[in-house]
Amino acid sequence: MKDIQASLNNFLTIDLTEINRVALLNRVDTKYLLHTEEFMQLLPTLSEAYNVLAVNKRNIIPYQNLYFDTPDYENYLQHHNKNGNRYKVRYRQYTDTGVCFLESKYKTNTGRTQKKRLAVQEISKHLPEKNALLQLPHASNSYKPMLYVNFYRITMADKAFSERATFDMFLEYATPQMAHLPLVILKKWVIVELKQDKIASNSILLRHLKQQHIRPQTFSKYCVGMALTNTALKRNRFKALLQKIV
Image 1 (cartoon, helix red, strand yellow):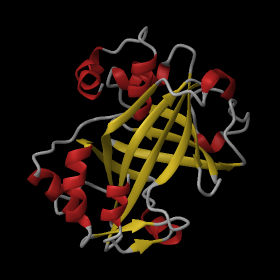
Image 2 (cartoon, rainbow, N blue to C red):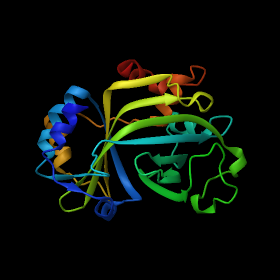
Image 3 (cartoon, helix red, strand yellow):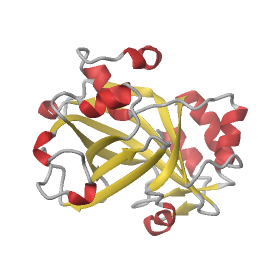
Image 4 (cartoon, one colour):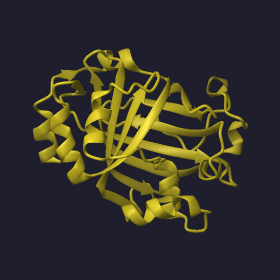
């Protein structure tokens, strides 16, 4: 992590107020999976075109997430089966600040991601009864906690604040019963996510990824974690990806 921070020291920084200018709660996401060596080659090429978020003088920020699903794993299976119009629901806590949200993500069959969030005090193993804002397809008591997904994130915005990029690394997966005992840790991979209002081919990040011959790669942190920690689940679609990362 020291090598990553050394490279980030060459970036100009922005704060939370500035990054919120490009919140993009209704957006198009493009994901990539990079080995840490590829990421270290990519990072210096971005310093002229992107600013990096700093929170409490830190650029590599820890996130804690608790994902929920129905007892029959509806959210997981919808993603695995490539269903359009699918949901994910989670608590997300920004560990450095203590700020916490209950969030839903709705992926439409046109490829857009619509994110809704509700400020809460802390991560809970239950969903609140009143969550109409999230517009979930089932009642709160239809969901149960499934998986902790914790990671470190670097967040950037381009100079024009037209797109945002996140880089998630050091993923840890744990069950709700043993939250502090990760079952799986992914140390060698970085998930890159470019968030735009619409796909813009003139993105500097996209250009550099193409130059490194890195192609888009679907990657759901929740679904990959469930496939890795619950071998009883259907996982044919993820087989090649799982073999690559473990």
